Image (cartoon, rainbow, N blue to C red; front, side, top):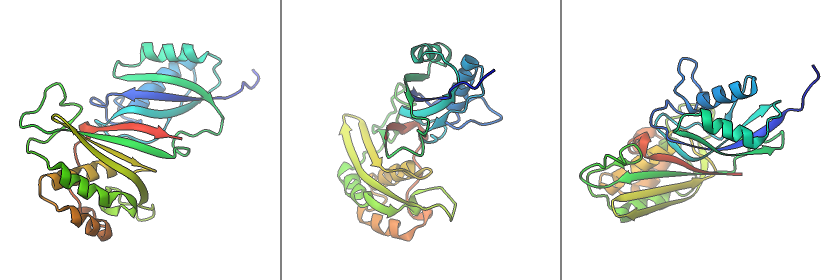
Length: 250
């Protein structure tokens, strides 16, 4: 059998991460987003498919727009692939779009910027219908204090204090373009926009801003927390269920 041309297919994916152990495939579990998609694509093409995601979301984290790509020699039309994925993937994972892209395209390495949304339900009683998609904070949060603190976190900084990443070799310098905080009724949305984020960085920044909103940390202490380059100086790691990968830019 002669060599068939290798196609590179880019996918836009949405998922509810509530019942999964995160994006990344795990050898001893079928409860990952990457694993579920690879299994379906593998049966569809008859090949061993590796799906490359723009980034790894943790257990319980959702995606409004995750981008991934895979290589295949299948000549199946894209719309047929899309229909197949829709039919055989679980209801909480949907491939929204497929495009054929240049063979060099890499979902992770070519990503220029990302947006993450952290969503809080700020009311004494939790909402049973939002409990999987918001972090419940029963005490009133001071939005003005949170916005004041967020201003210190914007810019190019070493975010060692805001990551669980232990590696000494990997650079902890990132550029955060903006952090927007909006409140509508009982929901507080924090939108983080940057050129990339370290492991748990968004959840730690969200947890720190929550503690600022509760009056436990002062906004102007953000400067010292950044300079200190010590994880113990920042706030707690906010729960995964309030976090959404919102957009990936190329």
